[in-house]
Length: 433
Image (tube, rainbow, N blue to C red; front, side, top):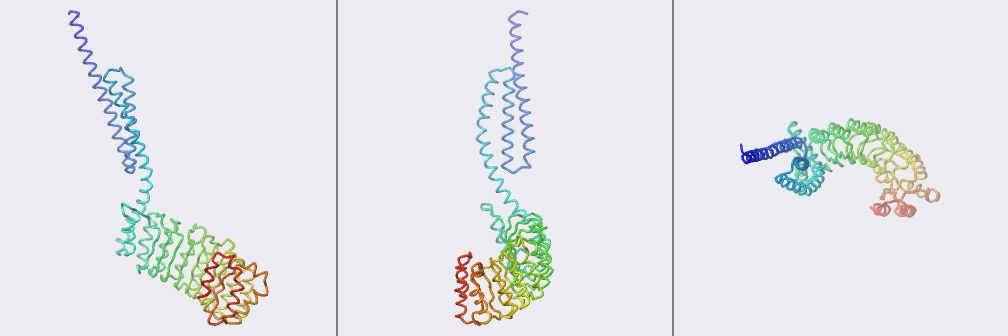
């Protein structure tokens, strides 16, 4: 074989080897890149949409870097150099996309968290409704339609119902709240919802799992002492209660009901507002109220007992407890069927002399006449030191039973305390009603 033929044959072989090498690099590295992307796609299916795109983009970047380093490590040909430049350009161009995707994923994750929790609640609630064979209340249907809007999603922070949906209706929404561990609800207000004790039980079960609600109202909902037992158990500090306001107005809980509530409230340091108007509490239940009031770590600021039947013995116990209590600023004892007996006036005088935080005391619609009002007026008039230490700025008495001039004199005596209380001006307006 001549030298020329040998060189030609060698050149052809080298060309074939070079082309084969380039094809091998493309097939091998392409397979690695494709396999890596498929694996990344499978793993990212567990993530939110924006996070999936972000993960795939990062895998692409790493794969391109491996591709570049491999081409750089092997024998550099003109084709390898071109591929290296293209890969470098792709690496640089993908960085802005990664930054944008990261910011989008960060903002979207928060929104998706809220949306998903509300959506989970709605699905669980709808499932419970189907299981119980009942319909969604119109008010709640409108609320869910509002907060599930894709363009402007929201959260369920207030649950307000005044339809007689019954215990089953309360259980359907309460179990959904509990099962989804919904943490955005702050206020539950039920009026004539016919929840009964089973409805109270269902809501307490939710509150135990997710202590986020601060206001709970069962107004005229047929709650009995059994419902108060559920509430009392929840309000025990061992359950980490979150309630700040509790209203059970117009429920016939009676003396047993307040005793059941006191099991928790006598050790509760969170509740600040308690309303028990027209709950059929008599003098027999006054001792339970006293136990609530004398708790040293109590945060109770407002106690509304209007419309019960505490009478003289019960009110005397309340006044006695108020000599110890140092947290309450408003006390409503209107319409409790007591009068100006000696024991009542004695306990009232001692309370007014020793309590330094009470700002508003409502004694209207009771048997108070001129004699009782005169005793109160003389107590303040003859004890200037005690009056100076008192924060009482509003004392509401039966206006149609007491001399208007005497009422005016009492108001003048208390006017010096109005600057001490936060509700001075409001108290003055209320006193004129």
